[in-house]
Amino acid sequence: MRPVARMSAFILFLGFTLNASFLGAGEVEIARVTDFTGTVTLVKADESERLLMDLVPLYPGDTLVTGKDGRVEFTFSRGDLFKLYEDSQITIDELSGREADDQPALRLTLGFLWTRIKVSLTESFRPSFHTPTAVLGIRGTEFETVVSMDAASTVTVDEGAVAVETEKKSVVVGAGKATEVEVDDKVAPPFTATPREKRDWAKWRAQRQRKLLKTLPQRLPHMRRRFETAAERFGQFNKKVNEVASVLDVEIETARAAIARRDRRQARRSIKKINTIEKRFRQNSARFRKGLNRLRVAGKHSVRLETFVQRNLAQLPADKIGTIQSDLAAIKQTREQLRASVRNAVQNIKAMMRKVRAFRQEVKQMSREKKRRKS
Image (cartoon, rainbow, N blue to C red; front, top):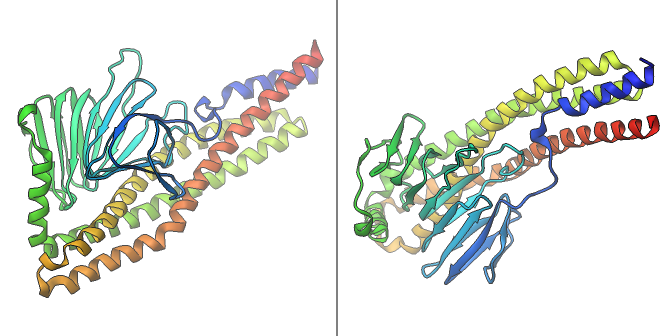
């Protein structure tokens, strides 16, 4: 085989060897608002916000916030349906939709979300849900998730099953069962769920809120430690994924240089390394993403808690207000310190994903050009 032909064959091989999960362009639509009533605010990833006036697409980093009279429904392209009820807040995580085989993740900061996941025999679709106290792995089709102001979460499953995971424990909640997760990671064993027609989540949230006014001085240190732990782990995950990304970046440039000088042997070695390193990058990105969502949902919840405290100062124990405000100030300080690093970390991961996609597209374009010249 002539050198040009061999290089053409190699380039074709290279184009189909890189992981196809990095294909695609820019930000993609993750979901779409299909109905809403009352006051609903759409907050974009850049923190700009506007009242919802029409049915709009939702992208990575978008947040929906409902007022006391607001409700909103949205769907994934598969037909999965979500209903967010009054005084609630949910976010599509920043890295959703970045890869062809990616599973979207949602962060429920506060409130009540009803979910129905469409069953498919030919598709493995398992989105994850993050609350301030738990991560939900979806194995079933219909369930309700509620987050109260004290950060407690309750999960009630009507069909299928949901895996509820905390830092210390995980349980699987089957159909007709429910569980509650407290801020100290205590998970109730699955118990028989209240019949759907008798559930009153507004009442449950109000009861938890009244209790919080009495117990906030005891609960807030748990929330602070949880947030600080999430921040520390985020830093560890971020460091690791950056290390792997740096190695991947070097190998991509090595492969580009080898292709440019027609060094077939070096290019083959580089592409093998790229495939191996990319796998490690994906694994570390998944850990980073989980840590990011834990941090983000805890941070957003602390913002809601600050507002709650300011509105209810008169009902809090007077001798504890100073301690409460000190804990909230410490959380806010950590949150603000992390703002830039979180944004940069997400941008860096997206940039590396774009670089891998661009490299593959370059190789495919070279292959097409070789074919045209040969013909």
